[in-house]
Length: 468
Image: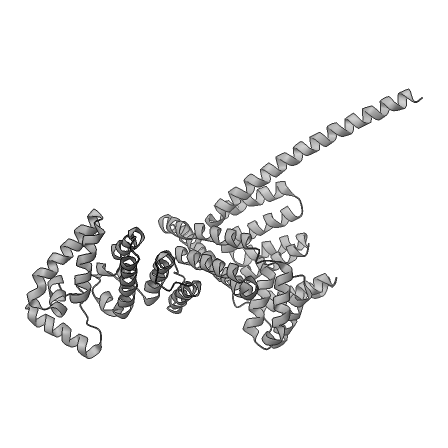
């Protein structure tokens, strides 16, 4: 088929459907579709110049050809919108000293992402492999990162933390809406760092949002690490290691950032949810979310936590509310009632995989209230229901033994957690190192105390002798 024929066909499709499809079209045909057949040679030259500029890091020359192609042949190659293209503009922005020129590059960067989003179906039609195609959420996530990296230093960009936060929120929402579990670890990390900066700007007003962002980001990373574990179990070590590299670091940074934020102040959290109860008391999702937030931040012994659990259970019995009522009964000294609610929580689960996870939550609740022996029983139940939680179960046992001051026992369970689950290997090794240091210090303290006691015994014996 002649270039002119397919060019007119593609332009007609673009005019009638709003999105030209270029599956199977050559570069020349894609250039001709928008720039015209007479511009194919010029377009080819600009593609070469753009690619050579990228390869040699001559960002200025690459940008000149990029501009021509974006204006005249925006479907010539998909590389105009992804890969090295945004990096080219990023390099130009950070190196530019002239505010006007810097803003021009920034606007080009944002324009590129906006056009990629608007032309996404057409650009995807150009890709030969499914893995190279993008979703709108993918595009928004990359745009959020580049906005976050360049807008604060660009005069006239109208940068705000709110905009950066919204960019990440919209991207994550779009990715999740398509069935997700594939939000990149770096995006989750940068989203939470933005949320952290927002929180620091107005801690009283944004604490609840920040707490929810923490739980959501943490849960998303943990979900992907669960996939790493599943990949390892299936014998796909390469996939397991790839997921670990993408999500283990971001999870550690998210947890460390949250730990340093001071947001998990028990009194502040209790105050927030005390005020919110009237607003939330008829909304089961809000009640359950609040119960989880309070439990995750050490407020599961406070009266407001029990108020939320009772309200949620009365609306719709859930395992979340059941655990809350079990903790209330346990605190009141009613062991039989507590056990009944714990068993109800397990009963409310729909499958054994969920029951195993609930048993871990029950064990955590028992640990927080001092029921170490019973916690171990539920940890074993968790493994029986769902062998895939073995690592998490052993980890919780290690945490409970630390609280019970059995550090040697905790070391044993750290080893077991790391051996059972690749996603616990690094943190278990780190905890084991710290525990062994504490055990060594305890031994030193015990020896010094024994030496002191012997010295005092001898001194008293000597004094008793001379006082006879």
